Length: 236
Length: 111
Image (cartoon, one colour):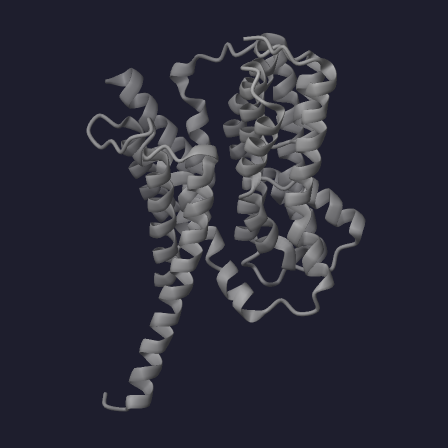
């Protein structure tokens, strides 16, 4: 658990400005402080919160607010599927808690840590909760701080840039084989294309993740077939 | 841009979005508990989720921070390359973030 908290520390710096903005923007959009805190506690997913705040502020249809938020959060289906085998031995109550606090960052750090096969399921759970719960606490505190003081952190500091830097520092060691490199290149390229062509609702991210996984599987099968062919042929 | 929606509508969105988001998060975590064996093809594919998703999350912020691919004058791309090099050689999250932020600030404030 302690290691999880320690590993989460740099990410906390990255989500802090995001949380401040989530609090300040909610007030700006006409939500009450209680509603702003409620959004952060009940939903606890930054990008979808900001989208919902923005759409509520511009009086969009409630169904549009809801669907937009959901589509942004759809990527977490992939995290849920990816991390589920590690949570399999846990009791229902722990599964519920782990589900509630699942985020990009908690998933990313934990799945990187789980490559250590010596960890038992309790150690895995505790590491995950160490990361996820410290993110939760900082997120709620920053939302409240954002509500109270507003977004006065100078934009020029670009503190939000710490978030992609965290993903980069996890991406580099995750690329251990050639099929994984293919998955990363395709995933990154499709996500960039999604942004450049203005694909709405963060669908570029979801499409990038899916395309990357499919490309990785195909590359993996191609490589396996190629090596089997050379083995069977015996010509070398 | 204050909202015209009343408290009932706002709380409705908060609760509905919260419940549905929990459903998304819990989907496979609950489902896998009821399946005896995770199919090999699924675990095989899931190995590629981290590199694919990390890249999809990270790369656009460096390559196209303003929504269009930019190389010249793109301080985030430069900072990302510096941070990527540090991640490659040092493999430490703190060092990577520090290198990336320092590179960004150097370009913004130091030059």
